[in-house]
Image 1 (cartoon, one colour):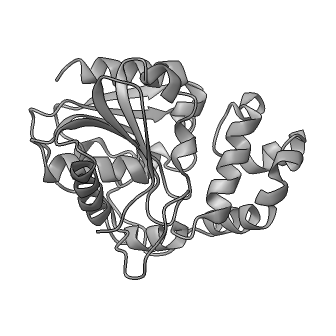
Image 2 (image 1 turned 120 degrees about the horizontal axis):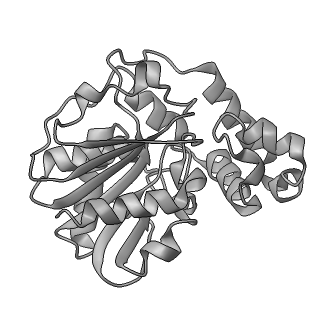
Length: 262
């Protein structure tokens, strides 16, 4: 079994945080310090993201990522745990809860992918352009992203609060997507798929979306019928595709509320 890079901070009940496609463990930096006061927080880099390698033949579809993460958590000594994931990470978290409901204590999907009735059949041009831009500029990102025009170009579609995002968030996000060898393999592995499984009603579930999510728009990527009937659905104001950036206190509060239901 391949070994994913991971980091553990804090003490308490284990909480796994799973980032999205083209991201890394650094996506959680605004919420980990507070969460680690109550939880043993495990942040992980998916294959071909951050510090994790992408061995040949690695399956990157969400059910396979879920199986890999379940196996890794067991190898790291965590049989049962809470899980929260963003975008692709949210989809993987949903798959984990569907596949192993006795191991997943609670689930928070933060703008999870996979909640569409009609799956995409090809890559979207904008996503490919974003990857190309980041791959050519990530080395100079610390200097470049000090300019308002550069930050607007890179983050205005991701966050309605792009002007107030910490510089380090923007730099780390640019490096993550620019160096993610697993970006296109993960994207291609999602094509033609959606989340379509049942989750045991005994697993508390919360789904969070921002009201300004341009990556997974409400019109066709936030289908409530695909999540369990018992799931709480929360819409966060002035928030884009990365609620843990735009609404960090609210995300922390929703994770704490959901985990208290276990």
